[in-house]
Length: 153
Image (tube, rainbow, N blue to C red; front, top):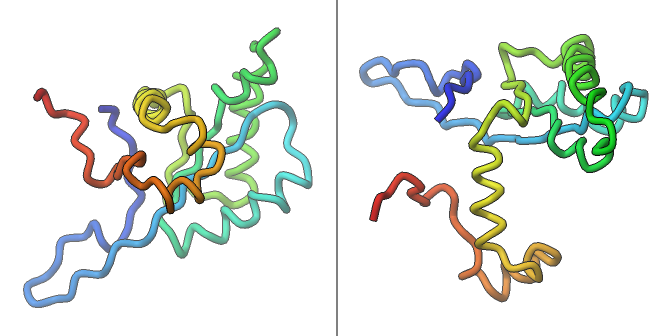
C-alpha cells in the first residue's frame, strides 16, 4: 500500500489516562477532472464547499487525471499541466494540505485496484440504479469497511 498522508485530527492524538477519546470525524472523498482551466463554476459548484468542509470532516480531495483521459484521450499531454495548475488553484482558493488530504488519482495504485474490485462485484444494473438495487439486492454490495483484501485464502 502507498503511504498516503493522514490529515491531523484530534482522534489521532494519544488519549490521556481517563480522558475521553473524541469520535472520528466523518469522511468526504471528492475529485475534479483536470480538463482545462478552472473557472467560476468550479469555485461556486464545488471548491467553495470543499474549503468549508475541511473543518467539519476528514477530507480527501483528488485530481481525477485518469478520468480526464475520457475527454482528452486524443492528446493527453495537457492533462499533466492542467492537473498541476488545478491543484495550485485549490490551494489558492483555501484548501489546506494540513487539514485535508490532496492527491492525484494516478499516483495511488489502490484507486485503480478498488475500481477493478468494485466493477467485478457490482452488476451493471445495480451500478445504474444504485439506490434501488441496494434496497432490493444488498447481497451484491461489498462492505469495504469489513473487506479483507489481503487474505490469501
